[in-house]
Structure formats: structure tokens, C-alpha cells
Image (cartoon, rainbow, N blue to C red; front, side):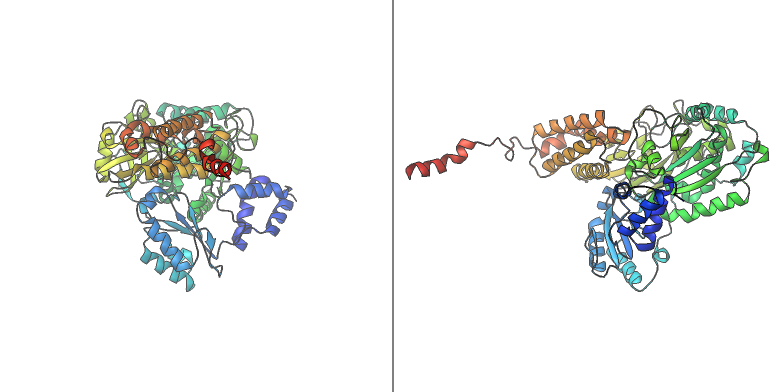
Amino acid sequence: MQKERMYLLDHLWDCQNARGYLSDEDVVQVSSAFGLSPVDVEGVISFYHFFQRKPAGKYTIYLNNSILSRFHGFEEVKAAFERETGALTGSTDQTGTFGLFETSCIGLSDREPAALINFQPFTNLTPEKVHYIIQELKSGTAPAALADAIEEQVQYKPEGDKAILFREFEPGIVLNRLRDFSPDQVIAQIKESGLSGRGGAFFPTGLKWELCRKAKGRKKYIVCNADEGEPGTFKDRALLNLMPQLLLEGMIVAGYAVGAQEGIIYLRAEYTWLLPKLNEELKIYRKKGFLRHRIPELNNYKFDIRVQLGAGAYICGEETSLLESLEGKRGEPRLKTFFPTEKGFLGKPTVVNNVETLCAAARILELGVERFEKLGTPSSTGTKLLSIAGDCKRPGLYEIEWGMRVGELLEMCGAENPGFIQMSGPSGELISAEEKDRVISCDDIRCGGSVMIFHAGRDLFTILYNFSAFFTHESCGLCTPCRAGNPQLLHLLEKVIRGQATAGDVSKMQQWSAIVKHNSRCGLGQTAPNTLEQAIHKFPQLFQDRLVQEDRFNQEFDLEKALRNYNQLTHEA
């Protein structure tokens, strides 16, 4: 019997986990099982970073190369891995025991340098720690036995009883409250609360649910976007790690409100180590009758949830790319002909919310609208989770009220002589230490969750280059502006760093930024040049200090001058 394509990624993972990579035989077998051509299967495999077509070692190591890692010992740790394993980066050692690869942010920015070994987390790495880990692996110790326990560091939450997310949670309490509301009343509560999407787009959550409820079709879906791939972000990791039950109840609330019977958690592959915990909680909720069973108190409402593991692709954080991936395809963004609430997963009305949004929705039902809406500002109600990392004394998780000033946040986390602060990841906003009075809210700095702090001694161009290389590498390649524009920006930044750029090159940067920003197909492509644009505008002197007056490397070629000596010699002969 032919398998449904939406399970293609799961099947590919099964094949890779069994053999260590995807062989030619696997491709043929998968093609036959799903009724696809081998070319189609190859196209899916090649799109995702973590699917390997060649042996990648008994122990596959992915070392995070994000900017926070590079500023905290990446090169020394990388050299230690190469020395201890005998594998050069991007390859396996001669025995096939170790594979060593670089990868983008793995959601462990508060404890860099970090790596995944067979998708188990290893943090705060040093050359000495690498030596110990590799020796233990060589002696037969399993990676899971050596991996670090990720104990979340909640550094701040509002005083008194104001915390919304980081507070005690009693499993089942939200579902008990849900019995007091009809689906329309649930949507009304979420709309009244002012809750907006917490992934960065800030679309009104209640309106999204209402649109899905009103959409035609009996079959509808709730999709949780747990693919937080924006470098520097780890807030959703903390919620999945600390209170997965809150997420499950938030998804049940959303499903009840819109009339969906199935929910899917799209979990980024970098969080594979959280998969057993999620699956165990799902089993518990099914056993209690909260999932997969009809609930008499909710008019016999029935709902179930499964987890879909991604395979490594930043673009899948964009909701339509995520839906394509869920359907077993390349995670390329869709044309915005329809919103997902009209035609989403498998063409059915679908709500896509991220982890924090669904958890906040559950809390609103539990705690009441009034408690939520009186926090924050009129345009940004409630609280917001921030992932703070970099040059500060207290990295970790901060639940703040919307409306907090940047200066207060920097003081709380012990920022060390801050020079640059990157809000909301590389696609967000770059601000200077002088902007301390700016407000974190939808009216000013719309922070999706990541706050990276860099002290004044850090080189801005190293940061910009790392961001630009990230976007170049992570572009899905579907549209020309993003596919061609980001490499051009990276090339121009290289010229600045080498001391070869002129004012004309800075002008070219601005032109290419505009092309990428205004013509890319999806929101992720459109925001890729944000930080570079802001850096040029806010730190013009830093650029000016790096420029040369005359381009000595790309002058127009003078053919007559080049042939002068040759012509003179041949004429004399």
C-alpha cells in the first residue's frame, strides 16, 4: 500500500537512523513506497541540512558556528574536535567513526560554544571538555549518557503575581476552564486579551483563529511552529523543556475554538533531544482522556496531536514553508494566493502559531483576560519571553512586561560595556548602546525573542559578515532576489573587511539590500538585509574608517596600455 507523502520526512529519518546515511538503495525504496520518482525524493533530501547521502560517522558532530559561538571559543573548540577525532570539518575520519560538520544556531546560545553529537546537546565546550567527550565515545559510552542536561535559567520574571508563562502549572487546569466556554467564546476571550503572535509577525491571534473557524471545510488543523531557527533564540526550547503540558493544552484550546481535530508540532531537528519528553507527555494526556478520546464536557470534542521532526532548514520557520515541509516536500515558501487559515496543511484551513503564542493562549483561559490585558502597553498586552545571550553576566530567559526600556533590560542581565545590541535575531533590529530609552513593544522595538549583546570591543563587521553568511547559506534559493542578492552582500562585506571597499561599494550594498528586501518571495528573505541597512545608517563612521578613496582592484582594463610593450617589441623586430 502506497504511503502518504506527509510521512516522507519520518521515513527518511528512519532510513538514516538505521544506516547512518541515506544510500542509493534507500532512495529507490522510499521512491517505491511513496509512489514518487527518485529525482523527487533526491530533491527533498538535498533541501535539508541534516539528511546525509554519504556516511557521516558513527558519531555525527554538528558544531554551532553562530556569531555568539565564534566570540566565545569556537575556533579553539573546532580545532580540538579535529585533533581528537581525526576528522577535518565537513568530513569523516578514516575509520568512519566520527563525522564533523558546522551548522547554524542550534538553540543553545546561552551556553556557547555548543554542539550536537547524534543530536544530543553538548554545551559550554572547551578543548579540555572535547578531549574528555571524544575519549569517552571511543571507549563505548553512548552520546546520550554524556550529553549535558539542559537546565533552563529563568533569570527574570515580573514581580508579584504578574508572570504569565513562568509560573506553576497544574496539568489539566486549562481544560477544566475550557468547559465554561463555547468555541466562539474562546475566540472572543483571545481577541479581547489582545494576544498577538509571539514568533515575530505579531498577527492578532484571536483574528487568526476566527478566520480559520469561519473558513469552509470540516477538516481543519492546528500546527505548532517549534522551528525557532532565528540565531540567538531559545525561548520556545525553554517552554518545551519546562512545561510541555502547557503547550499541549494551548493546542487543544485552539483546536476546540476553530473546530480542528488534529494538531501537529513541527519540531526542529536541533531539538531532537526533546522528542522523548514530548512523546511521553502525549502518552500521558491520551491516557488521561485529554487526547484521542471524546470529551463529554466539551460536547464530545475529540482532538489528537503528533510530532513532526524537521530536518534542518531555517526557511521552515516561515509558516508556508513549514506547511510544505509537513507535506513531505521541500520547505519552499508558497505564493500568498491563500492564507493558511483558508488553505493550509493539505489544502485545509490551518492555524499556525508558535510555541509561546499557544502557551500564552492557554494561560489566558486559565488566568482570565483581565490579568493578561492589564499587563504591558495598550498596543502590546501581556508579557514577552526574551532569550538573552552574549556579552552579559546573566544570560538566559527573561519574561518581561511589554513596555520595558532597553536600558533596564541591559542592567538586569549585566550587559558588559555594550556597544551593539541585536534585537530579534539577525533579521531584526541592530541598536546601539545610546538607544537605551527605546521601548520593547509593538510601537517601537518589536522583538520576537532573541537579544544578542556585544560589548563595545567587538568588531561590527565580523558580526555583519556572520549574519550575511548565514542568510546566504540558508536561502532556499527559490527566488532570484534572495538567491543572488545575499551572496552579493556577502561579497561586498568581504571587500570592506579586506580594506578594499570604496564609498561606491557601500552604495551598492544599499542597492542590493533594497532589491532583496522589496522583491524576495517570503518574509524571511525580505528581512535578511535589515541589520546591514541599519548598520550603514547608524554607524557611518565605522564604515568610513574601513573605506579606501580609490578602487585599486577593479579599475577599468586599459587594453592599449597592456599591449604597449608588446607592440613596441614587435615593431622594433
